[in-house]
Length: 245
Ligand code: SAM
Image 1: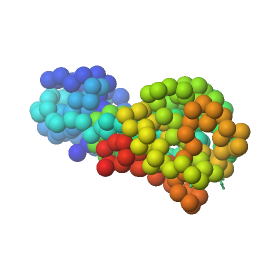
Image 2 (image 1 turned 30 degrees about the vertical axis):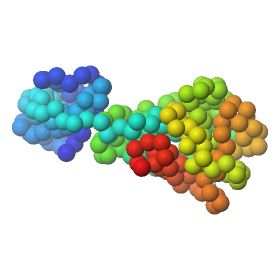
Image 3 (image 1 turned 60 degrees about the vertical axis):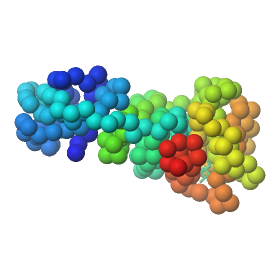
């Protein structure tokens, strides 16, 4: 069953326009009477029937309100240093399936990819589309926002030094403090998982993150690829502090 995210609140009759309407009419070649699951801005979910079609717009009629909420109680942010194209796409898709609330692409010293403003905007748009498709596929009742690419200093300024947020700094050179201990100490907090690029973090960046309150943790004795580390960190965070346990 196709799932649509509706910008607005559910009502007895709503109208879908834009790319979703185009997809229904020209890709799915939907017919009147067919049904679709709709999630609105408040996370409410309903089964709706397609009742009318006009120029790039589809009218839906509410048939049944459905039990909502496939969202984790954990506010989980993935701050992922920029990776090569296909890897970043993969990390975005998997993070959404695993229930991440927000994805912040981060520019750090060792990032291989470099984007000018135009390319950065295009990348963000691409990742947001991947996130929306992943949310539909896995039945999310909220859309994961992919923010504009930000640099490490701004990420730390925006998220460091507060009682309600823990920056879980997944650092390849950390050997003592385990991610499990960190997560257990951060129960109830908003988590920002920081994962480095293929080339890892510089010593200066590691010092900067920790000076901003980030807790350096190890993800075990093996050096994981960045995309593996991202999936592993999100999974254990949802297991320990979210809804995977
Ligand atoms: N170039 C680095 C090196 O050879 O040591 C490896 C970087 S690793 C490929 C990419 C990112 O994954 C790291 O910056 C870190 O965020 C995370 N990561 C990988 N293995 C990890 C581990 N065992 N503990 C904590 N973080 C890890």
